[in-house]
Length: 189
Image (spheres, one colour):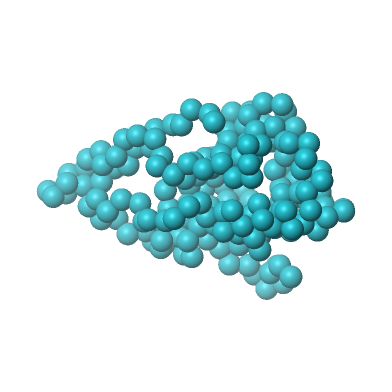
């Protein structure tokens, strides 16, 4: 695992003055997909838009790691993607669904077996901002792919996609996920 980073959370004291409420590493960190899988650092989530701003409630509680943000809410996470494991090429659609089930999203998997562009192809009803902070990844979509490097920002708009790390080095990327709604004709299925 890479070194965690600091998560600094502000709040308000009883007089309404700004305070540092928390300062430390994220409290929810989990590797999924075994030793060759990515590490999820859950940073924060909100449950509504607009998000309520109170004195010092803290992050809404969650159990485990969940891919999508809460309905009507947001999520920020950091992911460390190790280089792709050669075994990904042999992953079955059932194994891909089990992989996404680890993060509460078995139905997000779109891997169909032979002909799939990547074993971890998936789709969520979200708008995601992905900011690469170290390394590089290949963003794979139905009709193309592109390399994203440190400093690049991806705006993922509910599209079917996968991430490949073909670089031989770790990639760290920050994602801000925003709950969304598909327009007519874009719903999966």
